[in-house]
Image (cartoon, rainbow over all chains, first blue to last red; front, side, top):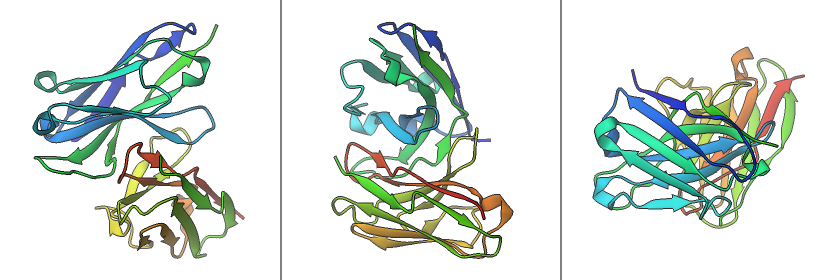
Length: 126
Length: 107
């Protein structure tokens, strides 16, 4: 079964840090771009960050709202995705979803988010 | 960034109705558009990719169309399981962006 399982969410004070993890199973993790998408309570979906795979040198992209504060990374040997979140703000409070992006073996690889985890909740509050 | 808009933001419908949701992009995204369904407390589920490609296991009453800047999601013969919020998303140009969502509830 294809599955993504997030962990690491919790309550943190503004200005603090948190590291989210995502364990993938049931597919060849290294073949795919991987992303984080978040959803604030009662709000819509917001893409957060992407890591491409080895054919694209593991390059990354970020939403403007998190650039410089969040770092996405992956460990293909552990089939795991991570999101290091620093300098957290109250507006970062959200459910964070680990999502599978496009399959990519090289070249331009546009694609939707076809597999979603169940999410992990991050609350930045004093 | 590409801005995505959806209309309507909410609608009320009956079982058996046909529902049409429109999604517009602020610049051309070719057919690099997806539609997702989300139910309360659950992760979104991919329904359609490449504007009109129905994902495996998605009922054929869902249909996507459009290209460039204007897209539609049509749900024919609405079923009880279809009451949910629907989002479009462009994956053509960074920053990847979602529409604000359309909530479909029971009339």
